[in-house]
Length: 278
Image (cartoon, helix red, strand yellow):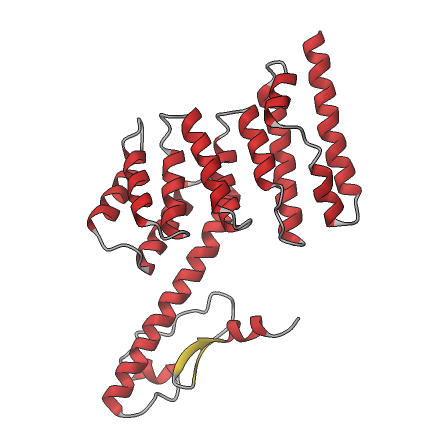
């Protein structure tokens, strides 16, 4: 009976935090409120063995916290603090580590905290391939530390039950050229296809779109150079590159804008609109 009473009190505390945070008008006040979450060790000690239900509740609040700040100030000062609580409370909470590491790197711009979180995951789950794989992924596509990426892709591939994807990437970074856009695009697509988590898919899609656009721009500008060298002038439009056989077709601009030639170079009108003052 005492165990359930303590759990009830903890649930009331967490729910009260969430309710009070939602009533705040200022985003800074919402952030300050979350500072009163106790440490993961304290929560784990007080939860008297009922770790999973409390971790699930805090995870839901974390997703809400992420959504609120992504739509407003894009400040995530407490992201690592909450994830550390979650992964101390439930050391096998996979998405708290993997998605959390991705969010810390992509949104909070704290890859150092992502590394700390993922190393914690590897410590508590030494036979799980997902933690070293995500660590390698972050080092490859964000930090460009290819030696670290190679080490952890290889480590991931040797874990029990590791899918073929991990072995493929371990081999690729060892034997192939590193750091090109095509490789990064393929890796993001691997993540998009491998995960069932909608937040991970959404982040992956952002980078898939961005890299594909960069590749399209690179290719079109290379064809402009070829056209100019062959004919002694810049093409008047991208359509002329198609009709002259330098391009098979004009790629679709992924933001609903257009690719155009300006000053002898292909650009996207999306970049122009994005740079305008709001």
